[in-house]
Image (cartoon, rainbow, N blue to C red; front, top):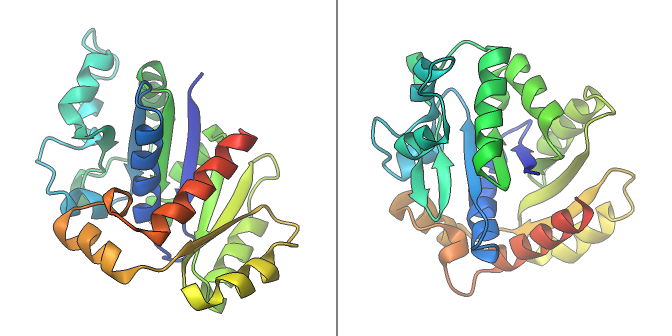
Length: 237
């Protein structure tokens, strides 16, 4: 049965980059299984970074829903192959109106073909998209920056969520000098604190401007932290 993990930042904190690197790491750890990364945002930040072609976004699948051609062979036509299969969002005016039926059909198609689905859910996608994804996920991971505004935004967002949602959170972009302090500060939290991801500006410069993901780079503290986060998440699923 497919596992679905959704990453979200109630206030911008790098969830897109974390979730994409998490998907690539998971695929590398499980080469005999199939991993999908699904971006849900009205503006595709990751598709631009990797210079995906005009045909490489999941919006093109809508025309096939309900037809005889609707099958998993369509997925390779719109995905971006980076070992894991990346399904980028359609841009701007191409972003579709929410359809519960279409989303169920698309998610079920992904589940037929992939063992793990990593979703990057943007707050800007809107409440209907959010509610759909969060209730379908085995785990929702809030990505939070270690500053008061981001922490408060996550706390407020968390209080509005259904108790039926399995929710954890991680501190991203944490300064190396503050790792021990942050871990001690939040380790006793009643919420499901999953850990910290260290800040590495140069590693992410390569990710953002040379399309070279952080988890592919050598001697990366972020990669080491993400591996620990990966182990913790899959030990609980």
